[in-house]
Image 1 (cartoon, helix red, strand yellow):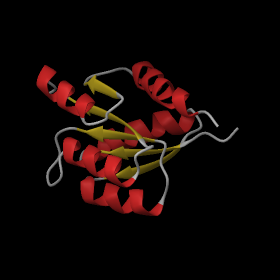
Image 2: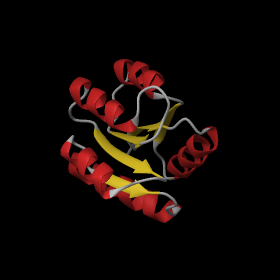
Image 3: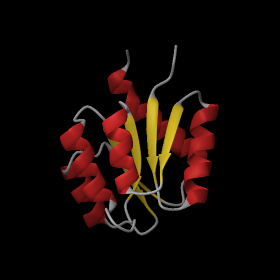
Image 4: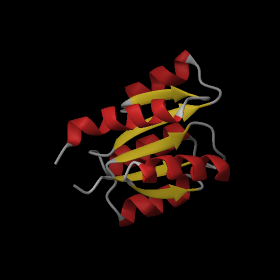
Length: 124
């Protein structure tokens, strides 16, 4: 079975690289975007089953990226993550359609578990 496409959106290249490596080892196809604008180009060109989006980024922040993904590709699952997360940020992300919220630092096992959980509603 081919694993699903995942989009990783983070302005930090090391985070994009680490997340991409972890997810590719699990068999996912991963596209990495350095900001919200690059993410929107990718969303317009390809179908992603899941997007992992950093909350704090220059330009479009994670909530804005979440809203744009949900307006263009409503079936795409979105997990927001942040090193500066608050209860308010989490509540806002969930109210706008995120299926999960992670606070950094988190382990690769936690990342994999959250990805699997988000995708289990979309098995095909």
